[in-house]
Image (cartoon, rainbow, N blue to C red; front, side, top):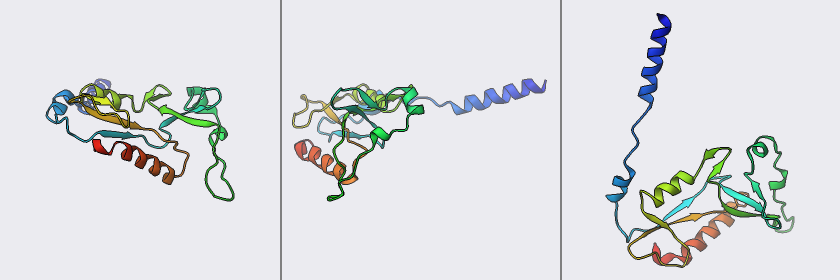
Length: 164
Protein backbone atom coordinates (compact mmCIF):
# COMPACT_ATOMS: atom_id res chain seq x y z
CA UNK A 1 0.00 0.00 0.00
CA UNK A 2 2.84 2.51 0.60
CA UNK A 3 3.84 2.13 -3.06
CA UNK A 4 0.34 3.07 -4.12
CA UNK A 5 0.53 6.27 -2.04
CA UNK A 6 3.89 7.14 -3.63
CA UNK A 7 2.45 6.69 -7.11
CA UNK A 8 -0.60 8.76 -6.22
CA UNK A 9 1.62 11.53 -4.82
CA UNK A 10 3.82 11.38 -7.93
CA UNK A 11 0.80 11.67 -10.25
CA UNK A 12 -0.61 14.53 -8.18
CA UNK A 13 2.70 16.41 -8.40
CA UNK A 14 2.95 15.71 -12.12
CA UNK A 15 -0.55 17.08 -12.70
CA UNK A 16 0.37 20.22 -10.76
CA UNK A 17 3.40 20.80 -12.99
CA UNK A 18 1.44 20.85 -16.21
CA UNK A 19 0.01 24.18 -17.21
CA UNK A 20 -2.41 25.07 -19.97
CA UNK A 21 -0.89 26.51 -23.13
CA UNK A 22 -1.87 30.11 -23.82
CA UNK A 23 -4.15 30.82 -26.77
CA UNK A 24 -1.50 32.67 -28.79
CA UNK A 25 -3.74 33.34 -31.78
CA UNK A 26 -6.23 35.18 -29.56
CA UNK A 27 -3.44 37.00 -27.74
CA UNK A 28 -1.89 38.26 -30.99
CA UNK A 29 -5.32 39.13 -32.45
CA UNK A 30 -5.76 41.64 -29.63
CA UNK A 31 -2.46 43.23 -30.65
CA UNK A 32 -3.44 43.63 -34.31
CA UNK A 33 -1.79 46.81 -35.59
CA UNK A 34 -0.21 46.77 -39.08
CA UNK A 35 1.70 49.98 -38.26
CA UNK A 36 3.46 48.23 -35.39
CA UNK A 37 7.25 48.34 -35.49
CA UNK A 38 8.78 45.07 -36.68
CA UNK A 39 10.08 42.42 -34.32
CA UNK A 40 13.77 41.61 -34.51
CA UNK A 41 14.80 38.17 -33.28
CA UNK A 42 18.37 38.31 -32.00
CA UNK A 43 19.80 34.93 -31.04
CA UNK A 44 22.11 34.36 -28.11
CA UNK A 45 25.65 33.06 -28.01
CA UNK A 46 26.15 29.94 -30.15
CA UNK A 47 22.82 30.76 -31.81
CA UNK A 48 23.90 31.06 -35.42
CA UNK A 49 24.95 28.23 -37.70
CA UNK A 50 28.46 28.46 -39.12
CA UNK A 51 29.48 26.90 -42.41
CA UNK A 52 32.73 26.55 -44.29
CA UNK A 53 32.98 29.28 -46.93
CA UNK A 54 34.71 27.03 -49.47
CA UNK A 55 32.56 23.90 -49.16
CA UNK A 56 29.30 25.13 -47.62
CA UNK A 57 29.54 22.29 -45.07
CA UNK A 58 27.93 23.14 -41.71
CA UNK A 59 30.58 23.28 -39.00
CA UNK A 60 28.49 24.61 -36.12
CA UNK A 61 26.45 23.13 -34.54
CA UNK A 62 26.84 20.09 -36.78
CA UNK A 63 25.84 16.61 -35.71
CA UNK A 64 25.03 15.56 -32.16
CA UNK A 65 28.15 13.37 -32.18
CA UNK A 66 30.30 16.37 -33.12
CA UNK A 67 28.67 18.50 -30.40
CA UNK A 68 29.58 15.88 -27.79
CA UNK A 69 33.06 14.91 -28.90
CA UNK A 70 34.69 17.79 -30.77
CA UNK A 71 37.30 20.18 -29.32
CA UNK A 72 36.05 23.17 -31.45
CA UNK A 73 39.51 24.51 -32.32
CA UNK A 74 38.27 25.01 -35.86
CA UNK A 75 35.81 27.63 -34.56
CA UNK A 76 38.43 29.95 -33.09
CA UNK A 77 39.37 33.22 -34.74
CA UNK A 78 42.93 34.46 -34.83
CA UNK A 79 43.72 37.98 -33.61
CA UNK A 80 45.67 40.42 -35.75
CA UNK A 81 48.59 41.59 -33.58
CA UNK A 82 48.66 45.09 -35.12
CA UNK A 83 44.95 45.95 -34.91
CA UNK A 84 43.84 43.54 -32.17
CA UNK A 85 40.85 42.74 -34.39
CA UNK A 86 39.74 39.18 -35.18
CA UNK A 87 41.16 37.90 -38.46
CA UNK A 88 38.74 36.61 -41.05
CA UNK A 89 38.46 32.87 -40.91
CA UNK A 90 37.15 30.15 -43.18
CA UNK A 91 33.66 30.17 -41.63
CA UNK A 92 30.59 32.29 -42.31
CA UNK A 93 27.19 32.70 -40.68
CA UNK A 94 24.70 30.43 -42.43
CA UNK A 95 21.48 31.19 -40.55
CA UNK A 96 19.95 30.76 -37.13
CA UNK A 97 20.36 27.57 -35.12
CA UNK A 98 16.76 26.49 -34.98
CA UNK A 99 17.56 22.88 -34.03
CA UNK A 100 20.60 21.09 -32.61
CA UNK A 101 20.98 17.70 -30.96
CA UNK A 102 17.26 17.10 -31.34
CA UNK A 103 16.38 20.26 -29.40
CA UNK A 104 14.41 23.21 -30.74
CA UNK A 105 16.05 26.54 -30.06
CA UNK A 106 14.48 29.24 -32.22
CA UNK A 107 12.21 27.26 -34.54
CA UNK A 108 9.15 27.48 -32.27
CA UNK A 109 9.56 31.25 -31.84
CA UNK A 110 9.62 31.68 -35.61
CA UNK A 111 6.55 29.43 -35.98
CA UNK A 112 4.62 31.48 -33.41
CA UNK A 113 5.55 34.76 -35.09
CA UNK A 114 4.50 33.61 -38.55
CA UNK A 115 1.54 31.51 -37.39
CA UNK A 116 -0.31 32.94 -34.42
CA UNK A 117 1.34 36.37 -34.70
CA UNK A 118 0.68 36.62 -38.44
CA UNK A 119 4.02 38.29 -39.04
CA UNK A 120 5.89 37.88 -42.31
CA UNK A 121 9.64 37.57 -42.46
CA UNK A 122 11.03 40.87 -43.68
CA UNK A 123 13.86 41.59 -46.04
CA UNK A 124 15.85 44.73 -45.14
CA UNK A 125 15.02 47.59 -47.47
CA UNK A 126 11.78 46.04 -48.74
CA UNK A 127 8.37 47.22 -47.57
CA UNK A 128 6.05 44.79 -45.86
CA UNK A 129 3.10 43.45 -47.81
CA UNK A 130 0.10 45.72 -47.35
CA UNK A 131 -1.37 45.43 -43.88
CA UNK A 132 1.17 42.85 -42.64
CA UNK A 133 3.56 43.06 -39.70
CA UNK A 134 7.19 42.06 -40.23
CA UNK A 135 9.84 40.28 -38.27
CA UNK A 136 13.55 40.05 -38.97
CA UNK A 137 16.05 37.43 -37.90
CA UNK A 138 19.33 39.12 -37.07
CA UNK A 139 22.07 36.54 -37.35
CA UNK A 140 25.61 37.39 -36.41
CA UNK A 141 28.92 35.68 -35.83
CA UNK A 142 28.91 35.11 -32.07
CA UNK A 143 32.68 34.64 -32.15
CA UNK A 144 33.19 38.30 -33.09
CA UNK A 145 33.62 41.27 -30.78
CA UNK A 146 30.30 42.76 -29.62
CA UNK A 147 31.25 46.08 -31.25
CA UNK A 148 31.27 44.34 -34.65
CA UNK A 149 27.85 42.87 -33.89
CA UNK A 150 26.46 46.22 -32.71
CA UNK A 151 27.61 47.83 -35.97
CA UNK A 152 25.85 45.11 -37.98
CA UNK A 153 22.63 45.57 -36.00
CA UNK A 154 22.88 49.34 -36.50
CA UNK A 155 23.25 48.74 -40.24
CA UNK A 156 20.07 46.62 -40.23
CA UNK A 157 18.17 49.31 -38.37
CA UNK A 158 19.49 52.02 -40.68
CA UNK A 159 18.47 50.16 -43.84
CA UNK A 160 14.94 49.71 -42.58
CA UNK A 161 14.53 52.84 -40.45
CA UNK A 162 11.28 53.78 -42.21
CA UNK A 163 9.71 50.59 -40.81
CA UNK A 164 10.57 51.37 -37.19
